[in-house]
Image (cartoon, rainbow, N blue to C red; front, side):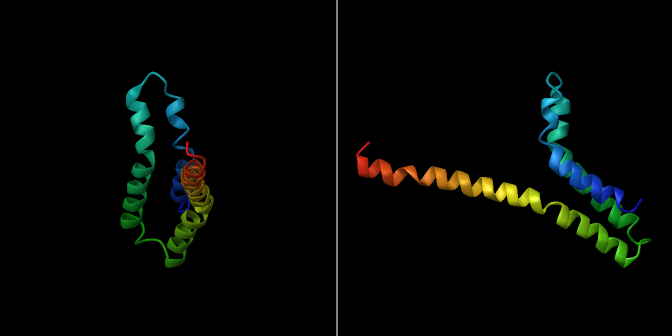
Length: 101
């Protein structure tokens, strides 16, 4: 049970951008689904501050590792998209200058 909230946090981090498409007509649910990772972060913090005192140090460390290692692909994909967009935005500039476009 101790590992449920960190696992749910990782799942929400990967799926929150898919949820607004499911709620086409209800704007409040779209806003809620966009804010879901932040809400899960607050729930995770509240859980650690209240129940975390009863858990062992090893359990808290394992919860942290689940979140940390679970989000590595998320950051790698986001970073590669950022680098790709930056390269795509800067690459045409030298070509346009040489071709006098």
